[in-house]
Image (spheres, one colour):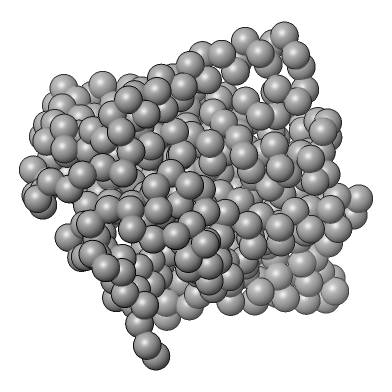
Length: 408
């Protein structure tokens, strides 16, 4: 296949918004497998096939997106699109990568919103798939993000606090505490930077983006208290998108505390949607579209899905546009890297706590459930089976168990 080449690969904005949109849409329709797999898809499409940037520039953007809160694969797409065609290219990259799964999950929410999910066998199977998927995420993240005893200790303490104090405020406090401890005691290895390249975003625009990000974190809770439900919906998802570290799976405890605890979404609806999110391509964060569609907080339906999707991804735009002009400073800051390491360790603890409650406690009712979840975990870890296959098999198993009348 003939490759499309740019005049100066990796040298900054030099393409059209349309080509960025079409390339990202291709990825949005075919990229199964979660954030780590998405990075592989991006590398093949943007580095190998299209030559939009070189290997070292690509890995620098990966590092930047790992440093920032937010869904890493979506941020990586925004960053690459911005390099290629400026801020409008970043928006186009996000639209192409996100829209297919957001539409699919919105439709799933609209179809199932009035169904009795509590008694559906296939829904129980989706919940068992969630056990397997999150267990794999906890294991892989722990191996990468807690390689020594100080970070293991941070993760264990974070899990204990998260289990004993399950509120959105507790998760903010745990993340902040991990950052402070990491800043004080952790010294990660130096990041090897490549040569400086001009940013497609000016420092003034970057500073304005960071200021807007900080301002919304402060203003939105006040607007929520004054305005009520629409502002509450947007604020909940904006907060989740602003605080998530470590990939889409970490959204689970943040969103559970935001939408299940106040009664906006039932536990069965929540876990069924999370399982369905594993079966569509694109970013896992589009789970927000499903939650906005099924929420009892108006506006729901398509309007709710739109508000939730914009809310959860807006922090990624503000952080990417804000960080790109200052990346040289960020990657050289020992304190910043230490704070990030502590934050990531705390995130492992938060996700481990969520694996137990609400995922395990909501899904596992009998020995047969443990067997199905264990089989799903083995498929993911030993045989490297794609998550979409595991989700489908678990849904079938759940339905067969229900029809056979096995006690659950």
